Amino acid sequence: MEISQKIIDYSIWYYLKYYPSPKKLELKLRMKFWPESENWKKYWWISSEEINYIINEKLKNIILEEDVIESKIRNYKNKWKSKLYIKQKLFERQEKKDLIDMYLEEAFVDWEIEQIKKEFEKIKTWYNRNKLIEKLMRKGFYYSDILMVIDSETL
Image (cartoon, rainbow, N blue to C red):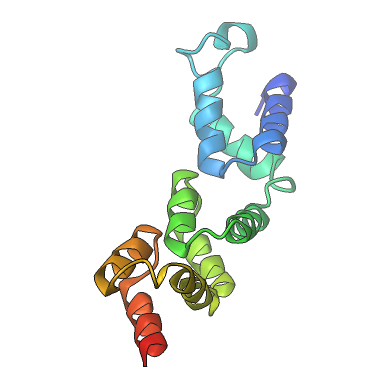
């Protein structure tokens, strides 16, 4: 399979700069080197098989999808984002669903309950029970977790 080295170099550069998911990288390569794009006259164009070859063979030692997902989860978690928020952001990046679920479960064993407790302590004097629940749900916490924390705190 004869693919221009410039296309392979671009693929490597793009991946190392933005760490996209393999699907996003494929979309970027299609956008850049597909027959309707402006670069295809300069570098010729690449087919779907060639894109798959680049991603699966040429970049197989560079693409570390699991590490990127773990890193993104850790980063969002350090910014105090909820599990639902992180899941949504990773879905937007078009990461693999099974990897997202696996790493989210590992990262959020009891962390969300602690977060709800912290939020509850900050705002419990300002709002009544229903307003507290609404506010915490807007932050992305599960209703059952919120009720568990509120009931344990009010006893």
